[in-house]
Image (cartoon, rainbow, N blue to C red):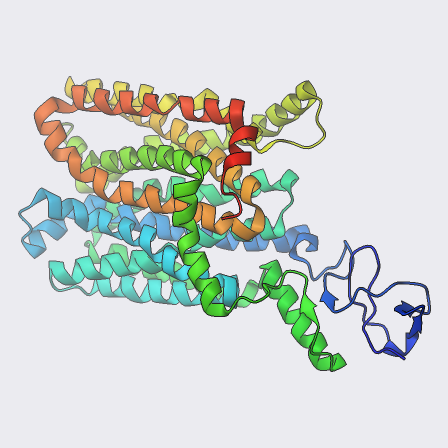
Length: 504
């Protein structure tokens, strides 16, 4: 009599039935009720197994998506929340260089790009949940370090290290959403998640302006520490592991112990690969994707450019609106609201027309399943708003038109930026799936954050040489030069995907 656990012939699922129900028939194990055993492979208990995150209740899925989105929101508020108080930091630490004062804001963003390259691969070995928890704890610790800094060297070090840990939700969030959602619901979930990187840099300075004015710049970091700590506690209490490979590995380990069958292995197990090899592969995979996949490379370059331009503007808003328009420290943060209103409006537009556009395109093409390239349709329509907004912003600041007009220009920029980032993330998740989505998004984030760190350094000398009019015109034409990228991928996406290193 065989003691092999039973599993259904259709899905390879291991059963929890008594092994005495299994007999040998014709040289193969057969359950007395007629189900053939698939040897030693552990899978979900059928398509409706509640242990599979894809089958969780809607409320449980959205709870996890909401917490991950809040973690991403806080980490994306952090880079610019201190921007309205930068003059206080400059005065207290005696900073005389515009480069250093700009890096005081953007060095955090460099940490956001570099940190996940080393931290997020750990999720492939230990699961997403412990990585979220430990990274958030480190993030809070270095925020406290910023609040207690006594000189610019300490401030810059803690700024980078807090970003190093703070980038984790952005790197793992796309994978977590892919774990719990289907293609039909993923767009809404990614929309909520994307509000973090889009609205965080806007909401941060609005709050930071009033905090720095009413208290001082140090309290911006104390407030961030409190918010991140509270969300971290909620994550510890409410979140559960979602990585399917980790969950099936744990299930296989339990069954090996309960059945005394050491040969049992997860359906998703990596054979002949050690943990160190997994970590090394996950570490280098984003770089490999950038080099070998034109889809990842060019979409990442486009996102990097747009967000670099946004950070360039945001690091100069204080000097523009305080210097040209007489805003105070408290009210200078309100100059970011144009971006905020635009991003929320873009989210509404996306939710309203996104699914309709995709359904209409499927009907027109006569297909039952959406192509990943359908995600790029709204990007083709609205990404030119970035260049248009830069033209409006630059020339109205140049001639000191009423302050509401340049803010309208920033709103156009924000609206276009949403439809660059959002479709790109969805496109990459659809292309790479749950397994490699984290690597693809990690590559995308790396370039975006490198650009957001260093491109703003060009802002002050560029404006000094060209003025705001011609300087932003140059940036606007640069943004428009990338508009053909989504058009090309939409038209030739099948061919590019066939030639790309999607499994790198």
